View 1 (tube, rainbow, N blue to C red):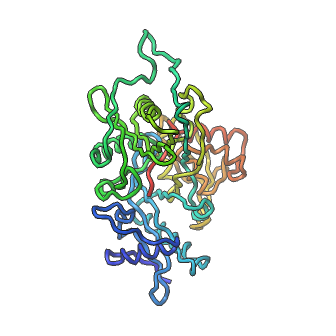
View 2: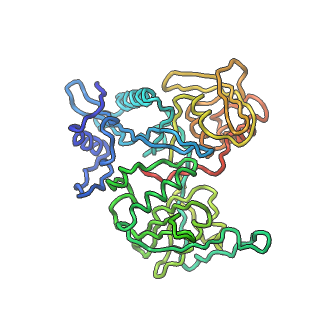
View 3: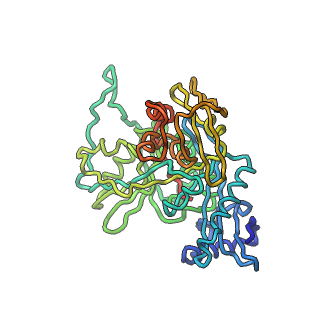
Length: 410
């Protein structure tokens, strides 16, 4: 079997092969873009070929930036379009492509790879761990009232989270530049968020609001008229208003947008897609039980390829030190590292000291962004704590300034 990078001439073969792997057919091309594969980088696509040259597998990667805790931006490979024809599964094709791809990521000087997993059991064995989570929140229209905030600022100021801005309704086709600019501001401050390169917006490749699908967009502007948030939505049967994504630069803007869609007339319910864990929206409802959470699932999976570089790249929010013993079974690697954090910065060096925690690289990927507590994985039997208090210290060290969240689909 041969695994090679594609050229522009291979695009049709690549697209046909990945669709066949999932038992689907390519959509009819749309003038002006809109197909997800129009954003593929052909030099980062791989084809697995049999000895007689037949394509049987695909894998690709996008060039993204990932926001780490501490608002640090780093390159990350966004793995996508991974598939093997049903006739060639369980013959080592997928493992060979994953190993080839990780070697290419390292050769590019990148130390992080990320993906969205179509099935949860697949990618752990290749060293990926779930690192961000998302859920759907459904609110009946007749129970959609927001409570009056109880906290007040000192000196008789306005209610905490108050908003002096405005909301304007636009069609998707009218506000592409606004969406791109607001999303970019948002993702630079949100741990776990991925960049959306300009070519994605220009090609309209992806899911709404990137795609050409018709949508209304509630654009929030601050008191100076500068856009600082949006909610992309549509109304379908049975009279449900579904919000594709809500992007806001602060909580007050999110609340203003939520109040707008929750107050929409002639709908039976409002569905917020991709609500991050611990989001305050349910607490803001006058009837907290009105918000029904469903579709709770993992979203972004993270894979570390250079432990010291990864741990020293992110920001930290308390001082301390841990010795981490990290196994990487898929690549056949092992390392023991002393992680020392002081004044928000980390130093990570090899050590022969006794470990505080022993863990698989997939578990390190899960805790890396601060969205999974190390103690949870200790209790689950995946991370081994070698001394009392090690898991508690790890929880405090790996905590991020806010819950990591990723909205981008790729």
